[in-house]
Amino acid sequence: MFFGTIFLLTMFLLLRYVLAWIAYVNKLDSRLGESTWRWSYDYQVVGERDFSDLDDKDFIRLRRKKNKLVTIMYTIFLIMFVSFMSWLSKFLILVLS
Image (cartoon, rainbow, N blue to C red; front, side, top):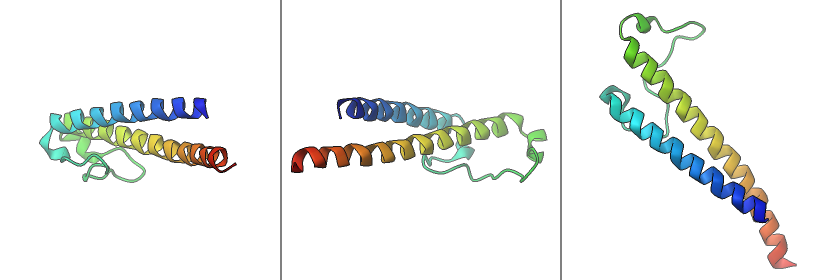
């Protein structure tokens, strides 16, 4: 249970770090919006690279970077949820026995 607590704290700090990066990337271009929890609204072409990459390379690369950060954020959140459920079950077993 001790290592589970340390793992959850480490994942929380990593999540805060990724959220700070998302906030930073959002401030670099106003077209990305202010949302932290969703991918950018300018969706990519399925199966191919963006055709708009020819028009505005800097924005497209920034948008892809934000989308990768949001994917990492959701991955960390999922790992934290599963780990917290495991930690909570161990905690309840300890308290109730």
